[in-house]
Length: 89
Image 1 (cartoon, one colour):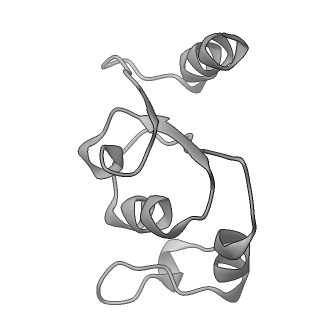
Image 2: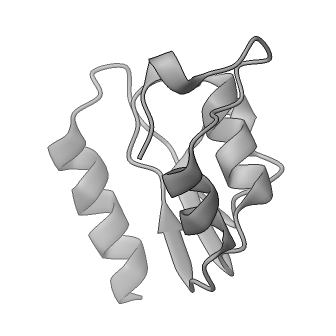
């Protein structure tokens, strides 16, 4: 939807595809990322998703309803397993 070359000087992504996606009425938005960046916080803040899930990073604390702790040896496989556990509850 966007790449780092689409970030403006404020680190906000500028992309028509992203703007269209963010305006869609969605129930769930899952951030599957291993590092905190300002553009993720922007997306989390402006998304109209009713429920947002992300790793326990400061950039998500004010925007996500569910934060998943990740250990120092982050792996996507472990993160997805934790997501599956919480979603199945």
